[in-house]
Image 1 (cartoon, rainbow, N blue to C red):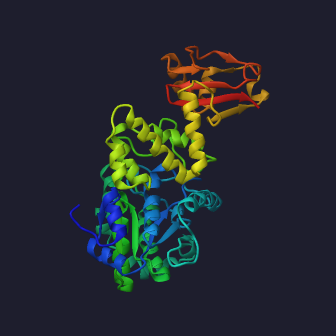
Image 2: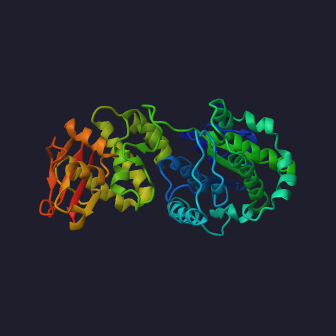
Image 3: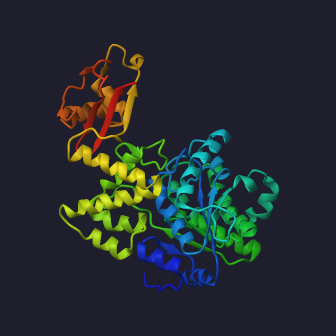
Length: 416
C-alpha cells in the first residue's frame, strides 16, 4: 500500500491491515478530512448470532466511530428473503419472516457491545432494509432501477461467474440479490447521506454496482472499501473450528470457549490478529507478535483477554483466563468450563462415553467421537480412556465428570 492517507480512519485501516481495496482512495480520504462520513455494512439475518468471521468488519465500524464518523449497521430483513449467492455452490435455504426477525434480534445484541447508538452526529444507526424493500412495486422497480443494470456485466462478476463456470444452478431469485444490495446503497445515500459501503472483498462487485446506480440515479459521488477475506496462516477460513462456528453471542458459545479459541491462535497469526481484533497500539502488537518460544503463549493470552473483553466484558475475560490456568496448570476442573447437564431420564440405565463426547460438543458425530476415543485422544477426569462403550450411570454423574479432547478442549458433564 503506497497511498499516504490524511484522515485518521484511513491511516488506521492501512496500518492495522484492514484494507484490501478502495474505489477511490483520495476521494474518500478527502471526504473523511472534510467532515463526518456515514458508512454502512450490511448483515443478512441467516443465523441467530454473528460469528468470528463478521468480527473484522465490526471492528472496522468501531474504528470508524472512534475516528469521528457515523456507522450504520444495516440488517438484511429484506435481502435475507432472497439470499446472497456470492461464491456459494448452492442456494441458501429460505427463511420465514419470523425466523428472520428472531435472527435480527440475536444479532443486534452483538453490535451494542462494539458501537454506541443514538441520535448524535457520530452515533451509530441500526436500520433494516425491509423498510424500503418490502413495499417495492415490482414493475416500477424494474423500470426505474432494473434498466440501469446490464445482464452482460452482472454475469462477468466473479461471484456469479464462478457459480456458472462450475455449471451450478443460479436461480433468478438469487440473481436479483446484487440489484437489491445496490438499491440499498442508493436508499441509504438518499435517506441518510451515506457515503461509504464497506464489506469483505467478496462483496466488491455488489459494492461497485451500488456506487454506479447511485451515480446514475442521484448523480452523487459515493465510495466503496473492502477488507481482506481472512484465512489463518495454515489456510483455514477464519472463525471455523473443529466444533463449528465461533459465535459472538454468549448463549450460543460460552465466553470461556470464545477465549480459548483466541488462546489457541497459531504463533504466526498472533501479531496480525492483535492489530485486527484488539485496540492495542500497533507497535505493541508488532512486539508481541515477534515473541518466540514460551513467550508467544503470553502474547496469546493477551490476545484472548483483549478480544474477549470487547465481546463479553473484562470480567468474563478474567474469569476465562483463571479457568484456563486452573485447568491447564493445576489440572483442576475450573469454574467456567463448557458444561452439559443431563436429567435422570436422559441418562436412563446408562449413557455411553461416545454419546457424552458428542452431547458435550467435543465431537461432531458418533463416528468422530469413537475415532477420538480409539486414538487415545480423550481423557475422563484427566485419565486416558479408550473405551467408547464405557457406560455412565446417574450415580457416576452425581459429581461432575471432566472430559478432555486433547490438551485444549474440555467440558464438564453432570447430573441435573
